[in-house]
Length: 258
Image (cartoon, rainbow, N blue to C red; front, side):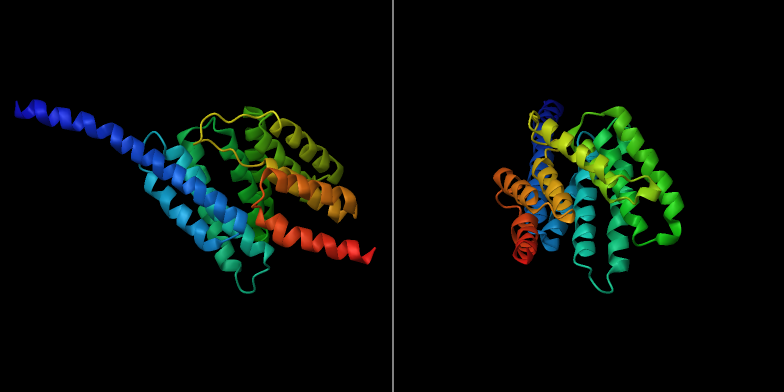
């Protein structure tokens, strides 16, 4: 009788533990979105800590590593964009963390295309803080991005990331601004049709695609198109602080010069 009771208690406890891990992942994902919207490093670190708690869950570890890496990657991006003086070592630390965790994610599931795509962009980002390793990191970027595109060529987040890289990489290194813009437009088209049914899965990117297209237009001084893109980004995500608090004010400065 005692053993039957123990078995019953164990059977009852398993779904609760699984549900708790799922709830933690959803909580972390909400914080990740909030931290990304507000470019708040403290919130992103809080999200990362939550994801780290789920990495031991066999069924969710792939996503936990992916989201933990994404939080650190976003921190590195914020610090880079702020041109934070004396922060190169900290930026490198966050990039290395993101690389290690994206690698852990795709090691669990080699068919996880989005993990490969974001791993590739972390390799590329590391070039900015480790220029002496440019050749090796560029090879890793190309290999990981090729893997992602081979696995899921019509994934909007992968198409978006490829478009961003095509626009920003110098032409001598294989970049092409026109191809990058076409990639961003294609990503937007795919996003408009996407329906993510599982709330645990990656769903970011639609507003980012409009934002990145707006940045490209602003770079080329096509200011009306830039404003339209930023406004569309805010229609999708009204809390998008990068657009609302940084890019639109920068755009208004350019508009006032004309």
